Amino acid sequence: MEPREILNINDIKELVDNFYGKVREDDKLADIFNKQIGDRWPEHLEKMYRFWQTILLGEHTYYGSPFAPHANLPVEKAHFERWIELFFQTIDENFTGDKAKEAKWRAAKMAEMFNYKIEFYRNNSSSPIT
Image (cartoon, rainbow, N blue to C red):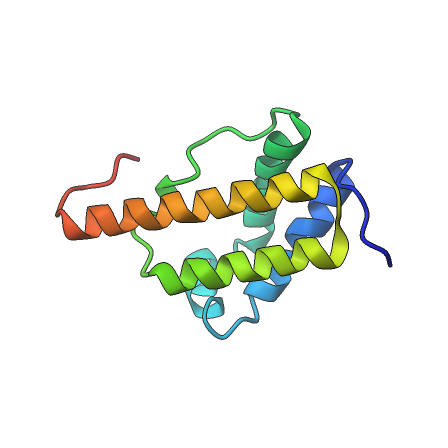
């Protein structure tokens, strides 16, 4: 199938499902995600659908703080780099256009910010604001 625009919730679901399918099998990320999420994958995917629906489609369905669940994960810059690599790969395989570019830009900025904040809290013995 040719890459296409991200236009609706079905496109968001395809993006999220394909991306997290890769994450769940990835040598660097699978153990961290599977340990943290456990048997709550359907719940996590639903939350990710709402998050990206809010961000990319402007349909406000996500409520919450995206950083808080990640604050104490055992991750480093290399994990975020792999996360971004898989996300970009998923976008490039399936989507094109302005929303695809925006998704990649926002994901990269989010990974950069999360990595920075996790390192800051880890190195400054302060507690994350959740």
